[in-house]
Length: 125
Image 1 (cartoon, rainbow, N blue to C red):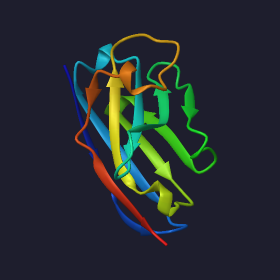
Image 2: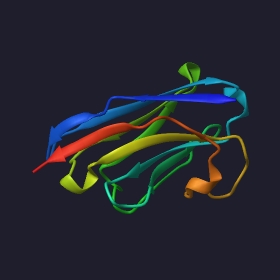
Image 3: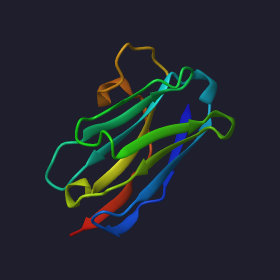
Image 4: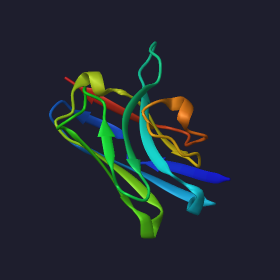
């Protein structure tokens, strides 16, 4: 089992920045990748970014490329999402996810078997 706890959400004006953190505990040595997803009111959960736990390879949704940066601190079993130039459309609950299953593509929520409780990000115009 892997437990995930997000932190760092909050409210910010458009153009501002926030940094989300995700602390992993438990059988973290089995993790292949971690990712961030978000769900806005009335919308389906969508992929934001993912990172390979071993290689550090990353990928991003087109909507956040150039504005968001995903990273990990393997020694601390933690993952981060630095969000810059935030827009009102970034408002959502952000979820941290982890997977212990190998895949060539971690861009789908169905590839992840562990989830955090979510943290709210609100961007006002």
